[in-house]
Length: 430
Image 1 (cartoon, rainbow, N blue to C red):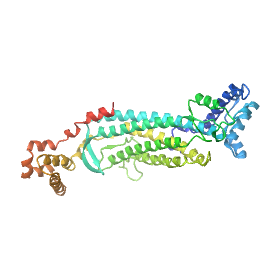
Image 2: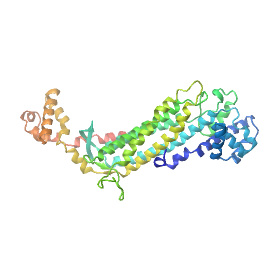
Image 3: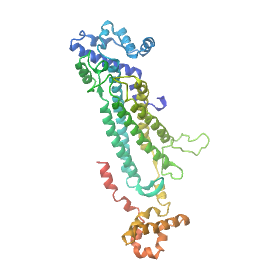
């Protein structure tokens, strides 16, 4: 990814320097096991650990000649560590190193992304409690529906991110496997205890059965979870963008003192950060289909997945990390306008209480169909004449014979819509 949408923590993980360092860790761990098993001379791993240096430029130079990245890497290590380094990689195949290392990079990334989600959960919990009983308009199809609280919106996001966190924990576990099983995965030229040692050393699990690669359904699950997280991220971003529209204006992103909204129009304050998140979410979700298509490889192995993972590995992880960090900042610093929320609640002059009015008529003995039609007709009149629904209803003698004035006034009241907010909060914030 470009630097504009990257954080150093993640770019360091996906740097070539770090990739080769992990390759070296895998090779050294494998050599340690082979020494204990008497398959290679003692001291190989310690000499390599002491003398080997990662030289990315030199690896590239060798690769340009041999056309094989793992061979180029091993050759560069031998140049630094000396002749004993020739015992590295005994009985191993390239995928043993590549797949185990790739999984480690995914695990490293996933753990940072978990921290990002924890920060978002912390901010959402704080804001949800602050605006627990702040009335605002609930909308369906973009149209005024019934009253909710702004805290409930935030609590909904919180619960969804709780699920995302759980999914990511499972996805990290899914890719936390190690395969050191040799060509086509049969251990023909390598002792299975080498794999066991490497897995323990790198805090991974043994892959129960690898072909010549770690099965890609594991990786498809991981990237699918990143895609779902991106979906939640965009859901929140779109909500912020909608609520900042001039006609709504119930909140806005923080706008710093010297910030400029438009090169042409000095009055503009645009939700650029949320719009940015919408775009970044698309990038992350773009990795899901390729990851799913990587599952179907030819026989025991081909490398059609390799070019895909070299792209989506860094791009998806770096992008989601940046986007989550940005979202936490937006949520923590957004400016809320409770008075505007209340103004929007009153915008349709009581139409939002139509359901309870209809239900009360059915309780009085009218059919649902007749009750619905009566209330709908008055709602249309309310729209057309720009008058309060309660005032129209109060003039209807038939309705007033069915519903007392006291009861009618209680219908046109926000408080009852919030009677179960505490119940919902207890469910969410256990």
